[in-house]
Image 1 (tube, rainbow, N blue to C red):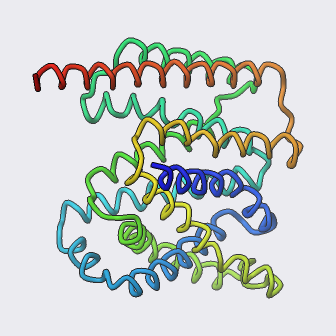
Image 2: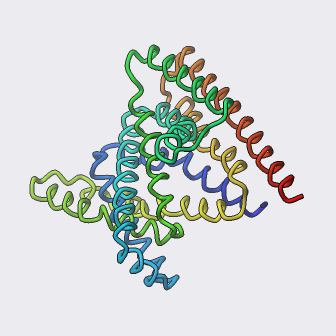
Image 3: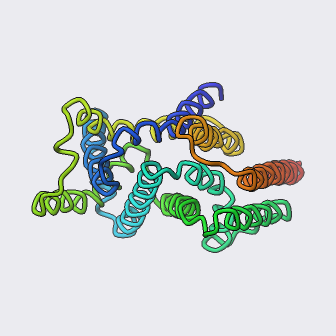
Length: 298
């Protein structure tokens, strides 16, 4: 449990400070950054899988049609999520990225209802209703729909849904997912070269080396997260998850100096209330399920 908690904290702290890393490439278009992230993630994960001698697991994935379809879906969804996140950070919308990852677990409940036919309890439905009210408040404050937040939450939620059908560890799964979108990334490199709009390749050597590390920056949190998920309960992991968006919110206010209105803070307060209600309702549901199982065992 202690080992799992440490791994989870490391993973979410790394995700939380990720905006600081992407801000280094503020002058590089988001699509070009994404293409490099895909390519160097594939290279790094290929080296890691080779060291682990897991190529047989990779080959097994690509011989299953259903797994390949799930991989294609998850690869495209995580690439969309990365693109929106990078664009949002480098265009001054870190607050909205934070909101997106606060909303993610609540949106997951709706996805489970629609796609997995799960039945949330009353407390979980109440949490969703409060979160919906928060989105309405934030929309009124912005004067527009918070599409960045919703898109991040939806793409990551659907990514998790697709991953449920792929029973592989983080290293093999991430290598396969990046392999799916690798041709698109390489094709985009060729396109940029033809039209003469490459930016990343003209960066100073130290900064380009930092961009090469995007593969490591992408993979490490996922690997720590996989270790954490194997060692601790889902409910505890859910609480630790909010370290990431909380760090993003703090960075957006104190480092990136984004404007945060009182109304927006009220919206975030509703989100936090919704998360507390959801956590309590989920814990009660878990205790009730355990109690029922113990009675059956007797």
